[in-house]
Length: 483
Image (cartoon, rainbow, N blue to C red; front, top):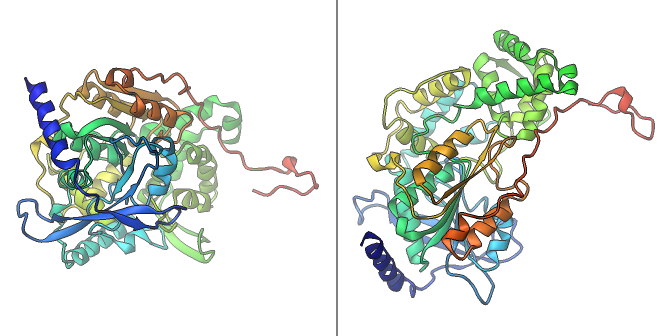
C-alpha cells in the first residue's frame, strides 16, 4: 500500500507540474561556447514565514538538444560547503557530456553561494598572505558582522535542509518529474538530505566522496593519509633513497616550529616574511592531502621545508592563490557547518594533530556564528528504494572508504559502492568512472542500474614520489636541468 500510495502521489505531482512553463531565458556563461538557459525563483529566507523576506535562487539549465530528449534531468550538487554550482558548470558539463545528449543538466546555486544571496568573506577568500589560525578566526568574526548587515543577513536560514527545499522548488518550477542527483563532496550530504526529504522526486543518485550527515570534522582521516604516504615511501626504493626516515623527519619539522621564514610570494613574486607556526604548518600539509598528485610531491616539499625553503609547500597548498571557479563562499560555509557540526554537542573531539587543529578553529569560528535549527531527521539515512552509486577513494583524507560503506549500508540493497584504493578526494574524473556513472544513470531499469559493470575501474597505483631533476638529467642541448 505504501508503494502504491507513493506511486499515485508521484503521478499526481507529475501531472500537476509536467505542463508548467519553463521560466528560463537564454544567457551566456564563462567557458561555455553555446548559450545556456538561466532562471531564478523567489524563496522565503525563513521557510516558517512564506510571505516574509524573500531571496532569489539562481540556476542554469544546459538543455539537451536531442529530439528524443529524456524527462529525467541531472542536477549536479556542488561541494564545499560554499561552492557555486553555476561557477563549476563547465566542469560538470564536461564530465556529464554524454548524459547531456538526451538529458538536461541543471546547476542550482545553493543559497549563500554564487548568485543566490551570496555570503562571501573576501578577506578570507582572497588573502594575499598565509593566514594563521588566529587571523582566520578574527577575519571570520569580522565577516559575520558584515554579513549580518545584508538584507538577507539572518545567517541561521542557510542550512542544508532549507537549501534542499529550494532545490525542490526549482524542480517543480521547471516541470521536471523524477530527477537524477550527482553530488560531489559536501554535495553528497546535500543529495542525501534531498533524498530524505523528497524520495519521490529522485530517480537515481550518484555520491562522489561521501559526507555522511553525522560527519563533524573534515580532518578525521588526514593523519591516516599522511601516515600511509610515509609507509609507502619507505617501501618504494626511489622514494626511500631520496627521502629516508620521512615520518621521523616530519615530527622533527613540526617540533622545530615556530620559525621566521622569508620567501617570494608564489603568485605576486614579491618578497614576504611570515611566522611559520606548528598549526600553520599542519594547515598547509592538510591542503596537499586531497590530491594524489600533490601528495606525490609532498616528500620533496617537506624535505625543502627542513632546509628552510617553505615555498614549494606554500605553493602546493594554494594558500596564496586567488579563488578559482571552485572557490568557497565562507559565510555560507560557516552557516552550514556551524549549525550541523555543533547540533549534537557543544564540543568537537580531537584524536590527532589535524583533528585538534580543525576542532579548535571551528570551535572558535562558530562560537558566535548564528546556528540553524537542524531537524533530528537530518542525521538519519533511511533505507531507500532509489538506486544509489557511491564512489570512494582509499587515500582520501576527508571522505574515506568507511564513510561510503556506512552510507551504502544505511541506504540498503539498492546501493552500489565503488572503491579505488589509491585515489584521493573525488573519483568522477578518474579513469572510466564517468562511463560507469553514465551506464548507471542510463540504465532503463533500476535492477540493471545496481548491477552496472564496474570492472573497468581498475586499481590505479599510487603516484610515484616526485624527484627533483639532477645534473644527470641534462637535456639534449647539454644544458643542466634546474629544479
